[in-house]
Length: 110
Length: 113
Image 1 (cartoon, rainbow over the protein chains, first blue to last red):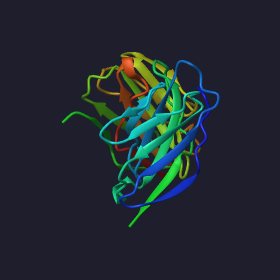
Image 2: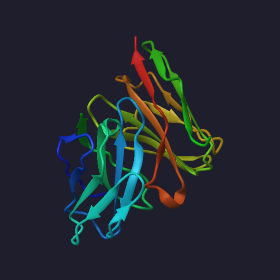
Image 3: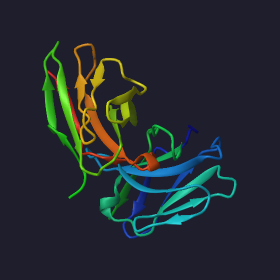
């Protein structure tokens, strides 16, 4: 599985968009980009995933660069409840495990 | 309500004691996983199972054992051979067609007395 690099922490004002970057320069053609988040002392929650096209769901948008070496998770209107650790993972869709790194701590402030 | 349940929420282990953590899912998922999380760290895979009566070691299987006798259940035993068991344990499941989309339980926090 490709290694991903994320900033250790970010701050965002409540109501503003939160843009979380992720570098995955060694991603291979069959690897998807997955995003999860983990609120303190809870299990991780799946957010979104994509291969090469941009994706959007009710929680977030995922923008993947054309060369697929990086991506950005966008929370369009961050709330205090979005404060969590966000994990970016590159993995084959039919692999057997996800590799969770340290992630990015997002703090949403009022 | 479909989902994954883990019990207990907190578990205390004495030195030399084996303890078993429960994980049940009613999502009709074929695959189930156990992860360990230490403070400030990401998750590390202990064991996974893609089908009943079959399971494979993950990255840190030493000192742990599992069974998969039913599709819905994947209990994890932390044996006395695991010298540093204090951690947050997370169970997850997925359909075989979407291994990257895993659904997690609320976790069990294991503490050593």
